[in-house]
Amino acid sequence: MNRRGLQRWIHIQHGLLILLLAWLIATSPWVHLYNRIPPSPTFWVWSHLVLGVLVLVLTVSFTVTAMVQGRLRQYFPWAFGRFRPLVSDLAGLFRLKIPANEGGGLFSVIKGLLLLSLLAVGITGLMWLWTAGTRDAVAWRGWHIDSVKVMVVFLALHVLATIAHIVHFMRQ
Image 1 (cartoon, rainbow, N blue to C red):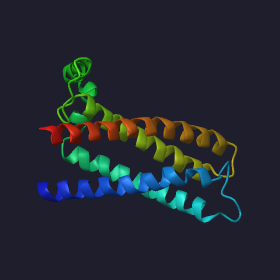
Image 2: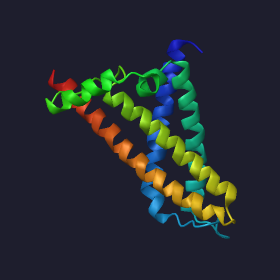
Image 3: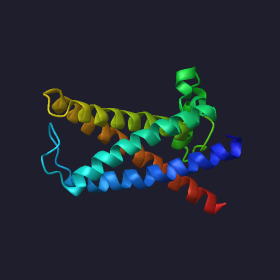
Image 4: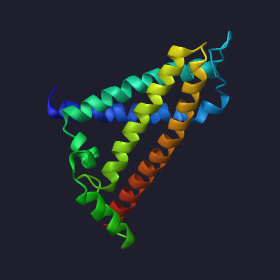
């Protein structure tokens, strides 16, 4: 796949992830799962299970696409010993300067941590499904719920960063 095709594919993945995550988060209050799938699962339970697995597949695909595009150094600069852009962006926040969207700074790190947390959500959800009906399922459910809470924090930060960039762009 050429560069243009990869860029289009990552936009499609991003759009699908936005829609599916919005659905999963919005409908999660109606999902009642503890240690197994109930004998007569509701529409909400089935949609959560099926779409949750689809989100995991999309997240893995998104991660692979980001790797092919060379974005892992951008999303995880700290893993490659690059702290200067992050420190610079954090210092700039105190001067009310909006950080850059790319380049391994704060917003890129937020994207990377969101990606990691999304992988954690998917893996813990899949492990709950794998262990459903066993004692281990309860532990995986707890880890899934905890990882969802972390993911929602990074998702909110990602949305706020996007809004900040849109507002900044419109002011210029």
